[in-house]
Image (cartoon, rainbow, N blue to C red; front, top):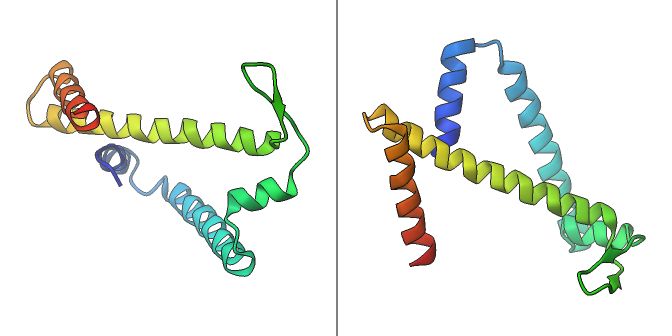
Length: 126
């Protein structure tokens, strides 16, 4: 749980009250089913979810920049792109939440983004 999640959940709770409790219940159920299924698969077969998908969906081709192809399932490639987009959205939410937290402390939003960008650059790129 990052700062973006805390800010969004706090604002949603103050704006909508318990009207969005159904979304929380659905998200918890979906996360439980996916995680338990992945855990059972790993215990029984010794493979993770990605490895099992690759083994069972091995019909498809991925074309590389040099024109060569490899047997990579298109479904798995689609899932990898979906996970990348989801991760990017999650990280963007964390940055926006951190800037919003700085804004709630009295800093202008633009200054908050500059502080977050400088901190991120220092952490990630030395």
